[in-house]
Length: 257
Ligand SMILES: NC(=O)c1ccc[n+]([C@@H]2O[C@H](COP(=O)([O-])OP(=O)(O)OC[C@H]3O[C@@H](n4cnc5c(N)ncnc54)[C@H](OP(=O)(O)O)[C@@H]3O)[C@@H](O)[C@H]2O)c1
Image 1 (spheres, rainbow, N blue to C red):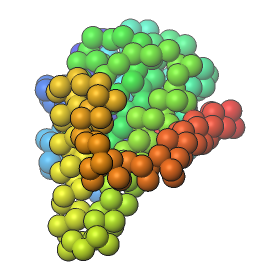
Image 2: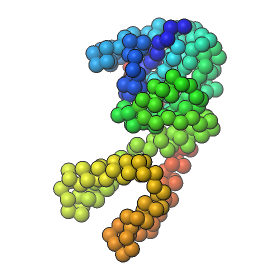
Image 3: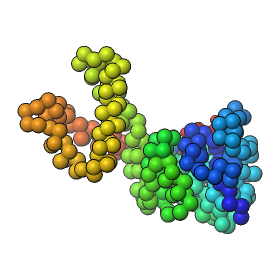
């Protein structure tokens, strides 16, 4: 078994993970788009081939990073070359371990991962279905990792997988509100973004309880308390509940389709 890492699909997510691989000479990528392949070769100096089966053959770790609708085609090509001792690491949303096993066969070990796009800036959240030192080492270089049973993956997909879009939505709303309050739009955006980043950094580094943190910022009768009252009246918590529940429901539907 060659100690190589193969990527099937060299798109945005594969690029993010590749950024965390230290030994790039051990990497081979398969990519359908010649334009994308040329970009990856030029930027990272990695080997990129058009054929998924030739990339996967003999690689110790095979990252499956194509879009869900392309999985069947890739599985058909790769299944005959997958062997015992190989590990298939799928980052494809909604493809269960059972469906991957049925598509790729039972010879290779299969780990499912739900990443998020922040791995592209080494601040991702990757949830894995099993421990593996090498895989956790690579994904850990692109952010945080944790291991959870697959039964949690609809919720994981809804929270950390889809979460970046929800935070960006909140950020856009706060920026627009800042502009309405009289700030130049660009300045409002910059203030909101740095505030979101700084809050996340502070909470992460201090480990402070969220209730204690909020109470600390909300001086009685002050400006933050006046704003927070509106969030309570508008049932912000209930809206967030419904958002995450809808995404988890959709994840369940897609998996059962
Ligand atoms: N983006 C996210 O935030 C996110 C979060 C969690 C999970 N994911 C999962 O990550 C996976 C990849 O997403 P992405 O955003 O990186 O997609 P992407 O940028 O579209 O990358 C997929 C790449 O795979 C190539 N490809 C398709 N069929 C192929 C084949 N048979 N052999 C070799 N290459 C092939 C595509 O080429 P063509 O474009 O020419 O078809 C494309 O360049 C998806 O399954 C998604 O569910 C994404």
